[in-house]
Amino acid sequence: GAGVSQTPSNKVTEKGKYVELRCDPISGHTALYWYRQSLGQGLEFLIYFQGNSAPDKSGLPSDRFSAERTGGSVSTLTIQRTQQEDSAVYLCASSLIALGSGANVLTFGAGSRLTVL
Amino acid sequence: KQEVTQIPAALSVPEGENLVLNCSFTDSAIYNLQWFRQDPGKGLTSLLLIQSSQREQTSGRLNASLDKSSGRSTLYIAASQPGDSATYLCAVPARDDYKLSFGAGTTVTVRA
Image (cartoon, rainbow over all chains, first blue to last red; front, side):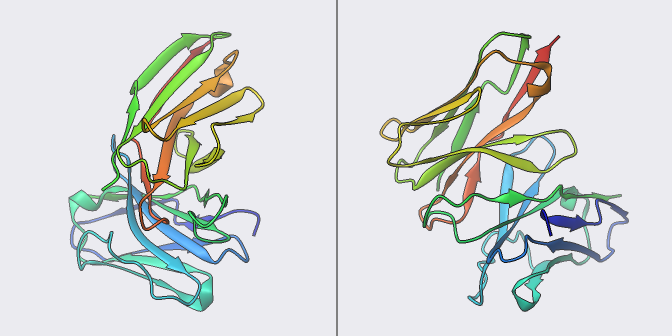
């Protein structure tokens, strides 16, 4: 696609429910990142996928969070037993190659705003 | 751990004035630094990326400088316009080079 697509754009759920957020990166981008942006806070790294390598899950805040990337393309971030502190905007980004190895820039999606009541 | 700080947190200027946004980082061993723009309810748009070997990068009315040794970058926006109103974030990779550490951003309002 022309850009990074994220669905849903908004999700309101009740505490304890399961949530699934989807990211469709730019075609051909091998690197995919998930970040979280809480109100008034900076962006917090969650997870990184690069090609067929094992993902870096070191930023996931708890074992209630998990993410998959199927076929090196679409990624899904799932949150089980949601808590109010999970409320945030979840941003997905993709790039051609991993940053740091060159001048490649990240392209971000518009984000999925999650509200846990 | 890389810590990124942006000052000021918010800035309001009349149209036409030049903007100066500051970003500082604690670990100077960086590959590059990026400046992003975020409009309300939207994702981030990359504005400029400065490689560690560069001192500055320019795009139109935007100019970003980088001083690695002092851990600072400055984004200059010349002749500001109301359309420049947004939150501007700087980001640097961590030592393992792909996790970007972001500042909290500077929210800019340009008054017509």
